[in-house]
Length: 397
Image (cartoon, rainbow, N blue to C red; front, side, top):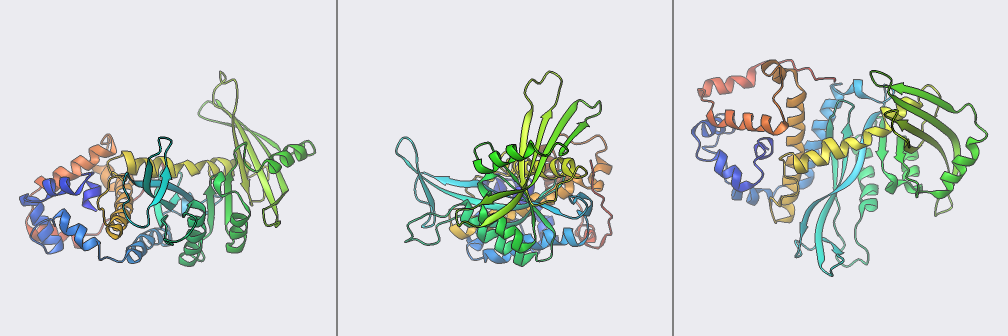
């Protein structure tokens, strides 16, 4: 996890920066009972033997502890629902087959790409947390099957695991249009989950037509909201309830549709349009809250989640191991490290020492690394950190 917290980028760089350094060796001896930082090859060898499901449980326990201790309660939607975004992203890509479970894609030039994506369930908050709750690895488990694994298949597996692990958690799923279909609506109904699903113009055309038709008969289902310090952001809402949708298995679903058209400045000629499917009861009181504090939070998984892990120094797409099991262990350790970094950055202890800020997140990683490599303290002082009592508050901005 130090490899990720310090943004070292690779096992080789971890060897160069952490091994053979006196203050670093002292800390490893005091806290972990070893003479020096383990070699990257040793980590790779050990990680081949670690049970992935046990490390996944560690990730779940960390998220669960934050929930049980009510650290995230004030960020719930409508004071009740935790926002959980489920989305997929690419992790590893190879020109040659990496393992028997690789997914394959034929490119336009005729080459075959072998790749490993994942499906993530992340708990997101308005102040920027993107906390991994559970991961589903998308891979071809059936080596003799006719069809490859995909995001939708992984989604059905992930939601089943998520319900079993957090059975009583009040969840609102934030999803993109890929998941707008009968099975998703039925899952949310069976699990007593709420959902807000982004609907693009080309998705579920019958729902679009029904929405436009019924809006002519609902003159009161409109609301205007002005946001911003000077009221420069103008939002216009429309909504309709009980729009009928029949899925491919002919099951009937009654859906609610919420639309928001937004002008961010007077010079903007065409408004930005947002449209969501939901099972929330829509009223003039809650439509703007559902949109701004709910539906639009889906982008947190991209910005504060995947983008940070790919381009913020965590090096998510780097193959830390070519072993199938070890690569999953490295991925889950990255999720734990990212959670720790978020808690550090938003915690009150760090802000006491850097009241004017510390620049970018990479600057903070550099400061932590240099402190680890250069701070010299007696072993007794290092061990005393175990017994200290600290109160940490989180930034709510």
